[in-house]
Amino acid sequence: MRLKQIQELYGHIHAVNSNAAIAGLIPIAHMAAALEALLQELHEKPKSINVSTLRTVAITVDFFDFLFERGTQPEKWDVSPARILVVDDEAIACRAIVYALEKAQLQSVSVEDSNVAFKLLSENQYDLVLLDVDMPVMTGYELCIKLRSLSAHKKTPVVFITRLDDFNNRTSSMMVGGNDFIAKPFLHIELAVKALIHVLRGKLQPAR
Image 1 (cartoon, rainbow, N blue to C red):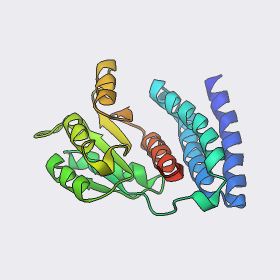
Image 2: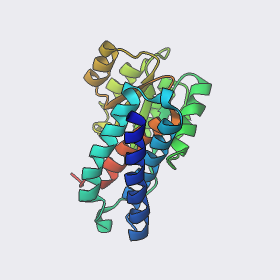
Image 3: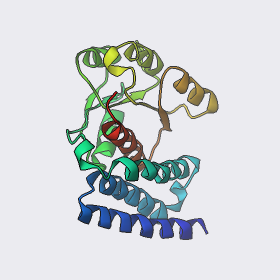
Image 4: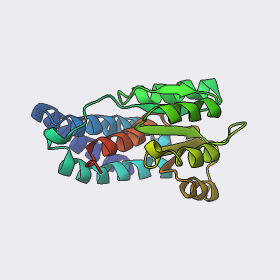
């Protein structure tokens, strides 16, 4: 039954993707293409269907309300490339995250040192920050608290990526200013979908 529902939703999203692309509604087409890829992977690999992936699908479907409200007004789009910072002390993990983002056509800068990351945050504006939690010298939670002290990053979306997958750590991530959470190992396309939601929301949000 679940696979049938995923297949039906895939058909609807595929139609949205095609029609939005024809109409030139780039943000909607971009989001639909990413969700389409996630649904295809879940249908082909049912073992990947879990609480996390289903939650991501549900959040993305809800996000289309926002997209249809804001994504149909080209004059209000910020078309500049997204600026994303990836921070993880493991080089392999950094490469995996960067690869995941590329699946949603998102380019990023990655660093393995949290102090270097804070220096970059102090000197640059980013549209999204992806943080590992368990890092030496400065944990992801500590770095998030510090970046929230920077005027340029008080509202920058922060997504924690960690092996720590329990309620307490999810709560902790929100308390230090995080916006989302995904546990390792993750589906590349699921992370891409999450990242794209945060990027598009920021670019279509009215200036304050």
